[in-house]
Image (cartoon, rainbow, N blue to C red; front, side, top):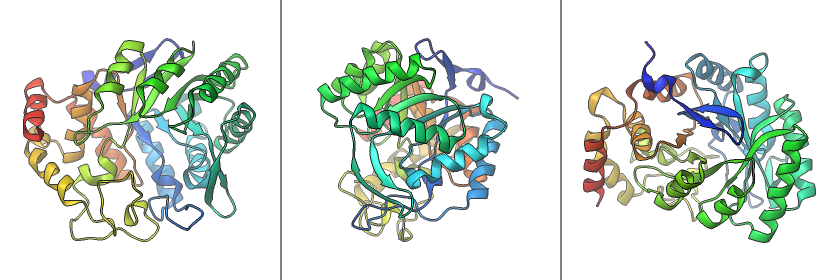
Length: 332
């Protein structure tokens, strides 16, 4: 039975499209790829057929917003998503990102390019990999791009809109000042930023409210920590970025073991998040919806079962205000 949460849409006049309250992030389905020094940047091995089935199952369950990036799996994520949406393109809202340089043959990322010329080159390549004639939301993937260069890229995105290559654009950044610069553009529709129960982002959420943007929430489940699936004693597999976490990934220690500080905070709020028949992940998504009416969390997935569990969060909807307050008190 469809609930109010199922029907609730995030509407955006700037981009002329709707996105459901829940999207799916496609980083994990890109499989293994690495930095020049061999450090893993993916989530380990994947089965492309299972990924395709998971995307299609998500569509069947009413999840229509899919966020990827050209660099995920060095092009593989876009190709798999394009394959999954073949014949169903008009049911989906596709978001992708650009800015990182990579080699599809060696599956490595190496450098970045903030020039408008490269933005166009990357866009054409993404359209080809995705098998589509337009991107619904095109996002700058380099969160620390200087403001003067970002202004040129914003203007380039306006040109892409005028040409019908994209419908809207945004920036994946955790800096409100940078997001505000992009938001000055007529067709800027979103900012993508990190936020979850463990690490709130009031500055970014406030900006989205003030400027009428989608808040596309990456890491809504703290890269698996808020799913309950990360056994404190189990190491991450080789090829998983969590096995050798970079400096920005504080939720895990070397080997992919959950960091004690963060694991303790998860346990502190587990009972509240799993009330009313929710799984831990569903409660974490419900917290985000309660936190902001503009939040569109994009949890990752690799299997049909994960897609089904995440989509089922819609039937539960946001946490109640009293539960939101209780979580805040427990983590204070």
